[in-house]
Length: 225
Image (cartoon, rainbow, N blue to C red; front, side, top):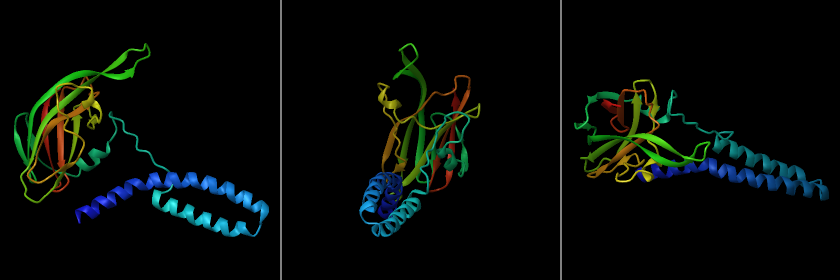
């Protein structure tokens, strides 16, 4: 059943890509129709009907016009938090504590605050530095059968919300990135730093929020900026 679910998710994600490819093909088809119409006026009605059917299929599967999700780390809701906000709060904890969340034992081992140099350039041609906060997590799924799914986000006392930075780990030496995968498989331990960049320098308190999509509960680790 889980494999079928995964296949469904993959197909759903691929639909907009397929729709884009089909749209490109339609431009070619349109050109062919015009050429055929010049030679045989009786062919055009049938071809037009086929074209309409294809377009209807594209609209059905892609949901109409292409939609882009714009993620702004500051003062805007992020999709991760749309899930997190659904969760029932188990409690608020400190660095070093181990907490039970569903079938998982989760420990925030330590927090690292530093900066790294990116490949992006400023107006003077100098490489840009980014500050980051790294939360060193250990997640142990104690179940023998249940795969847990977790969402992780960071929130500061200024109301800003942050997703984990996908590429930050490749710039920072000496640490292991926790990674973006949401699944925690039975009887496995996963460790690493959940990395958040461009955290507001004025903020003084931070909350690391972890939500279980199985138990529909969440925990908070609170610490200073």
